[in-house]
Image 1 (cartoon, chains in turn cyan, brown):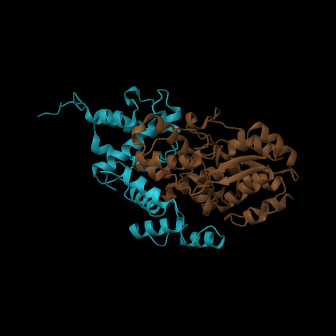
Image 2: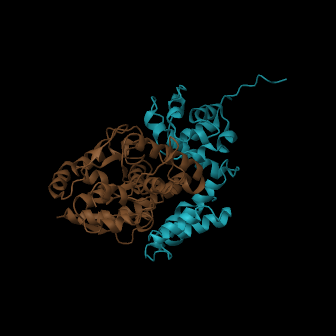
Image 3: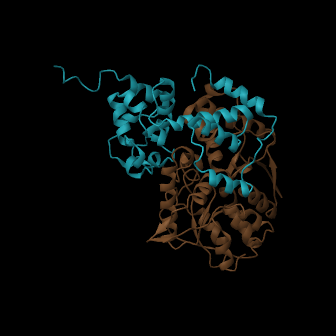
Length: 187
Length: 282
């Protein structure tokens, strides 16, 4: 029987990893839950923002990195501006997403990282976002062709959707930026 | 005549086309000479900062490097782009190791709303109002990134901002007090978790209607798209309702008598004409 094994090991590498990656000292959290009280997307989260902070302190890497929370966070910064201890939780969420992608663990919200990848592929290909290309790319990956098709038509009728991608000369520079930034990274 | 560099960003060349058109329109009326940044590229938006810190810094900085040679203030109407540019500026200083090429940080970046809501401009705008928005009750909706984080935006009243309200009052409109001024609309989750965005936008729309507003005004292309297109099924006390969503530049153009207002408004999904003609404003 070894039920008494401490949840916090003497060295908590996950906590250190997050502090290093985000440059945010989450050890200052005293669990007032103000971040979760003001968060607009808590209803779609499986672990509340204050609980994410606690789970990092416990060193529960896999639980945090496979959560829905880190992907449904809309980066609205409400938590960060209201934290009485100045913990930039929105920035911690960014770091968690970066680590989740690097970890190769299954994402708690599968479609959101797929969307981000489609978005970045569109920029990499043409230097700017062409909305129709982005939507097609995303729909091909998720096979959800019918959603918002009617709305798409209404927007097209009103001149909001361009059929052809923009032709610009800055595309090469953007490809170079991607090559520089994606070194050793999986997407 | 004031010369500024104009960074439109991708959505103003697409789904937020009327924001681009109305921003250009009112700039001209106010003697602001916009020079669209040649060969501008995407800022990386949410997808870059969520997945790759180096991309999130280098994509905006590339554009700032292009802008640097013009030695002008750069104005950005898309608040999502604006936030990425301001954030990249800070990150470039804190993490020069992310940068592909050095950047000296000489470009002064402004968000279009802050640019026009400043005292000098308010005076000019006041003098040019031809058709005051009399009787129009407006809910000024700032959303997230126009105010947060205040370390980037410089907005002091970030929990209850009033600068867009002041601009609307200068145009002759009446603003309402309401509690969802800076609540999130869900932004880019609209593609992946439409259910979350529908839920958030309908709460915002309902709150504006309950506060007595005839319309909502915004300065963010994501907020506009989400609020304008997610009104199906909106009911208050069993009654089906809708509320038009304007860009602040469209209402500026309307009040200053710009000739293309109808063209801008024809691009909206939720009908904006009915309320304006009902008030004798169009």
